[in-house]
Length: 244
Image (cartoon, rainbow, N blue to C red):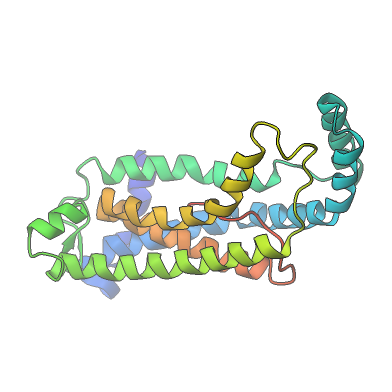
């Protein structure tokens, strides 16, 4: 954790002439962008893998029909198809998995009291939204900062939600051997409501210290822009939504 803390502090020192008292906040945003930039090659690989899986969707549907009564044979056939086409079913998870350690370390840093004395336009980086409401209310100095952050998160969440709905409508319906089997209805419901998880980021931003909220909103915005770029030529591609 000391490595992350030192990096953020050095970035803040470098940015001090430009951002003054908000240099630490700017350093957090820049650090987040550096983390996401480092993971970007994996995101590109995940996009290529997702496009390949979408291309294989008709063949996967045929396998599900063919081995509907033999789950073990179906799993083996799907793995063989992925190996044949050199497609990893886990590729899409790698960017999120690699970001998780950085997020938790930074969250611990932001919650450890080291943010005391640092602020963003009058909003202390170590405080929560409840503190902003208690000191000045929703339209006080800290409250206004949160309102801007909430507006950014809501905009990104709405974009993700609409994009996920379009992808879901354009994608072919999954093949289910028996629509009445246990879990089929749950899977369909998850497909309908999973895009709503985009808005859970609003709750996260309100619950964590402002410094961590900056990390979350920067990472979430980066994800939306990145996916729009990587999947621009594939309307029905990509997972529905990923948090940070």
